[in-house]
Length: 349
Image (cartoon, rainbow, N blue to C red):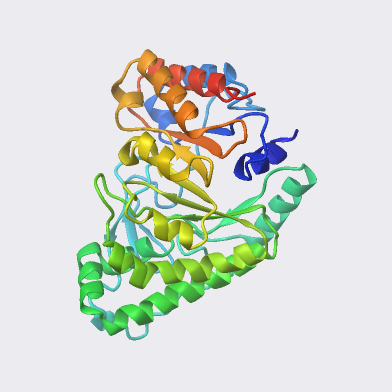
């Protein structure tokens, strides 16, 4: 079974050979950790890092909004700043903090940008062609923060909250502008016939969502549905990621067309996630980065992964797992997590 076939079987509950596991090392890690130590760990875990090739010196590529002391203005006019190379910044200037600036404000060109970064569509075409030639699983989609967070970045969180409460007419105009841009971008991706389309956007806080369920249903859900419908009609898998506590919004997300839900484990609760999704909707579980992996023991980490696999997985499938490594996690914990992910990916085999 190829990796692509295994992923599709996991999503469709068709008895994959193993649980798909993804371990992502954030670019900032390469200047926070000893590079040889990280590469030793990657080499020792070939199931997580297939085809890994050691380098004498790792020189990571930082995104345009991930560069320390280098403010970046995106295509919508939002200015990003970060205090650490490799860590995505936050928006420090909102171009429409005052609606007086709305006159003459225009959307960017989806032929040239995804809204956050410049886009080379010919390069994407070439990459997708190579992936298909190699039998790889092809993912397309919108950039992180494409709709709700885009509104927030353009207006500012407090302003956006009041806009929704006040039914601000200009907000509806801005929403249509963003929706039309995203729709055009999605249609360009769908021409390439990917296996899966991603719609990543953080909606949750540590406790509860960043907007009320009523406002999500009124303002954001219809936009999501319009953006997801073309993928569903084409038979493309719809994948949604959100950090934070999204329990109050999940029913509307699934109703909007989501087939694979990527959400955080401990913030939402393992038992709650199992009760809501196990055996029904494929979960790509975002493994804890705040508590156990960062400050727990290797034994606690092993028990966490085993518990999650046992409660959320099955021989039929429906579970994938992902971890994002950021600076601050002890090396012994990184090793323990890699060990556990590699060990339990075959739990149902």
